[in-house]
Length: 175
Ligand code: FES
Image 1 (cartoon, rainbow, N blue to C red):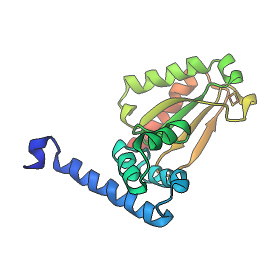
Image 2 (image 1 turned 90 degrees about the horizontal axis):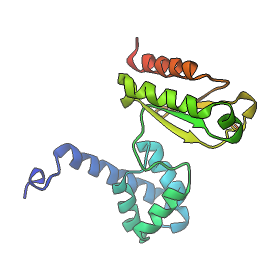
Image 3 (image 1 turned 90 degrees about the vertical axis):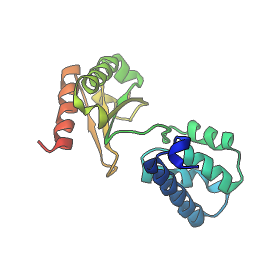
Image 4 (image 1 turned 30 degrees about the vertical axis):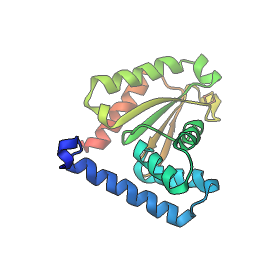
């Protein structure tokens, strides 16, 4: 039966092969050890920017660990992502100081900016825990998911947050 007849396109098939190769390489590097699951997931995520379900299923088979255990580990640690992200992740701190100084409004402003412009594809906006720079509240950390570079923006108003979102959109589109 053709792959397209069972709902798998050629591109999807190539992606699946690529994910399997990556997991194979990571398992070969660390060995088939349940104790190395976290560094293996970290390495897979650093390549793919998130942990696709297919990678979790494949690594569970390779290690002989149940899928529910792998998902439980991936879900427990805040560092792991189970959904794809954009080129830039905007993490809005919702720690106490930031929350009291307007984190919700900053968050809504960023969400609105991504909804109303073409930057939606490149940006992911999410809530985060305290970054440890509470005197700058409210704080947003911007992570470049390609390079891993991080930038901190503090004492933000909703309109400043929106300008920052547009600035990163400009960077992405090279204007
Ligand atoms: S509460 Fe936001 S940085 Fe600490």
